[in-house]
Amino acid sequence: MCRPETVLRAARPLPEVGGMHQETLTAHQSRMWEAERVVRGYPVLHTGIALRVRGDVDPDRLSRAVERAFARHEVLRTGFRAEGETLHTGPAPHHRVRVLRHPELSFADADLPALRQRVEELSGEVFPFTGEAPARARLLLMADGQALLLLYFHRLVMDLYSLHQVVADIAEAWRTERPLPPARRYSELVGMRVRRRADDLEFWRAELSACPTVRLGDARPEDDWTPRGAEVRRTLDAGFAATVRAHARAARCTPVVRIIAAAAGTALALSGARDLVVATMAAHRMDSDAVGPLAQALLIRVGAAAPHGADGVLAQVRRGLREGMAHQGVEFEEIAAMLAAEMGVGRDRVAPLTVGVSPRSHTVSAGSLSLTEFDPYPDDAQILVGCGQLDVDVRLDDEEPCLLVQYDRESYSPEWCEAFTDALLRELRQPPAGRP
Image 1 (tube, helix red, strand yellow):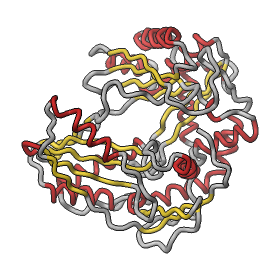
Image 2 (cartoon, rainbow, N blue to C red):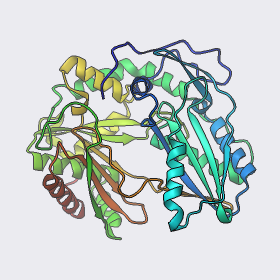
Image 3 (tube, helix red, strand yellow):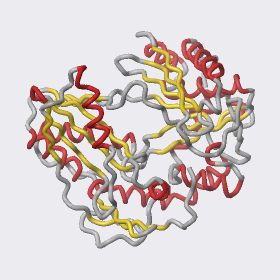
Image 4 (tube, rainbow, N blue to C red):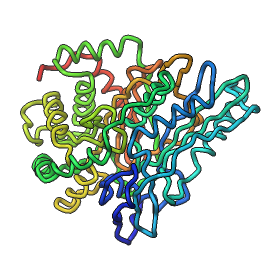
């Protein structure tokens, strides 16, 4: 994605009445605002979820639950107002859930294409940045009393882990109808990072010195982000999750550590690289119910040329996760900027391998209300993968567990990715070679 020539800055916020006390945007928010200015008018920076509501639907009660959940979190009651290239923060108007009646729609197979189209239309409504919070909720009332709750946000205020918390808050607010306790202020958590920044930046500077720029694939694409994604999917048998957990216990580590180490070791073996920087999403927030773009790609360096290279990949991943979580005063965007300025490493080459372990599906039962994830996109939707990135997602807790490898077809050949996927599955089914 091209970067605008003008300099991005965040202005002093408007007088605060329940909004954030932030003198500047975080590094992540600055990057999102910069990207928004490039793609203005298109919803490519939106994130959210469509929730099927089962049971008796009381629109007023559900609307109140959503409003209380949104009001609980500082970042969801903060408005963003654009003045040219500058973004101001301040108090946001009170959020109201918009109720839309669609008696012509249902969850019947014949109606799903029309329902998907309506959801895409709604989630594609751009945020004008005129002082409102970039967070919306739409309740679609359909035939036979069925309903769908659509939540969508700009990535200025939301990440995947925050989305989980908002869904849980809505379920709690529906069940109790009592005021929810205030959550930790987003700006306080950002302030904690700022105070730790200098020491943590020095840790990452040492950890990533002489950062490798290995390409795992067999092509070198241009440095931009384009929709050239492809995927390899493997359905996992019912006992796969139990096997991974048993091997993790034997190695005295968590399943996440085991999966990351297996993926990193497989990539090292197939690529012949001596050193590799792996990225994994970390939900270490210093407060479990915080909402805001706080989750980030945590970097783990592994391989013979990495620090502590004699430890082995499994031990390196354990150490990397532990020490990385202890030094999260620096955002991923700041680490990438440091590498670019000091070591000449392009952002898309920082971590060619990304590994994630999906949490349990967004399913929350609360009284007569059940919120269940609904996929608004057709099965053949185009995958978006950043250039040079191999993205591994292990879904252990879904109804149909699977291993999903997404890749840029101009960076990797299908044959290489098929071989990587099969080798990773073999590795995960075998006990680890040794304990850390």
